[in-house]
Image (cartoon, rainbow, N blue to C red; front, side, top):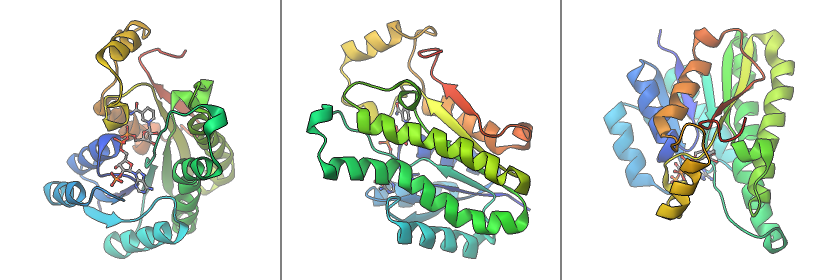
Length: 239
Ligand code: NDP
């Protein structure tokens, strides 16, 4: 029987690449999106995946997406908490609204989705959760304090939850990407990109495929003794 994966924020970027990668590897794939409806529907058709409109920062939307996925595929074996936003902003310019939007979208989202899938995973004594953090969650980024906090929170969530649910045979890990070529970095100039490449030991920025290979590994039985870990995919930018 094919395994089922639920990916949050699958309409663009890393999430979209993950939808394709899991589908190509024989998984049943469900994914959520918020604004990119047309892209999501097209991707769902291309990959025979199940697209669900659900705001990752809304607890009810998330639990509804989990219920719909279980109804369609009978269970969720793997959850990838990928949906996220970023924002460049001086710390003193972060309003309450900006702060809560960042934390709700990037961190509370993973709490809501993990809590929802775990009920069934614990019953079945089997499951994998993969959180997409960021190297800025490990070392902090100037003018991205709220983003860095949300991503550091995901690392804390990963480690603590891995300890709690390990005895139920559920693995929880993080992928921590460096600079990856997606819409999230579309604002960077050519000069910025060149500088980032120069600052990276491997001399390049990453692709969505680089990140998805790490996600696929952690989802697979090849990682059956790996839990509570933060797997950096950053070309050596932080070591
Ligand atoms: P993109 O901006 O390319 O895509 C973001 C995806 O998240 C979209 O599919 C978007 O859906 C979805 N999304 C955003 N907010 C919500 C929401 N509230 N509810 C549901 N879906 C939502 O980003 P990336 O692919 O680059 O980033 C993916 C993850 O990887 C993020 O968590 C990001 O922080 C992390 N990351 C990215 C890095 C990079 O350099 N690109 C580096 C480190 C980490 P829609 O368009 O439908 O709204």
